[in-house]
Length: 180
Image 1 (cartoon, rainbow, N blue to C red):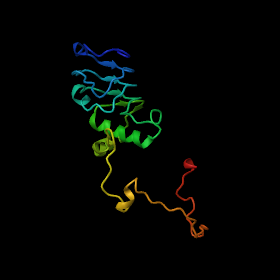
Image 2: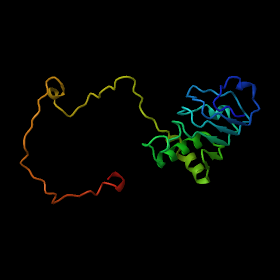
Image 3: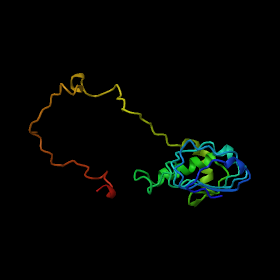
Image 4: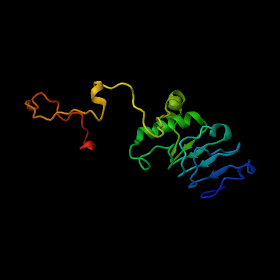
């Protein structure tokens, strides 16, 4: 059943459903699928899903899952700050939760991935702090108390007498080519 760009109301009536395509529906984390015991293929591409922990309970026969284009699936096409390692950690975590998967996103699940997911998958979920409103500052600061007040700021501008020649420098040893 393809419900791309449509509503999911009334999905409970299709308990014998085997394939469900729900791409481009702007679905978020509030998505709750009904029990679909025979569902083996589910695509939730291009939605707003960050994670769906209930999938393992409501879709026990799930073998093919695609979450491309969602927050849950980190890749460089969606976010430039993600890399291949982020995507691999995501795969391990999903494979740990959904042990019957044979195909995840655009790649077949390998035996090595299954073993790695079984051993370390529970530790692979990336958790980022969520800030609402203003960011609270930590109580620690290396600056003295008097310099923390923005209204009582005292700055110094002077010419430095020390000249750096780079004689004992490590050079650009820690800069990679992609950072130049």
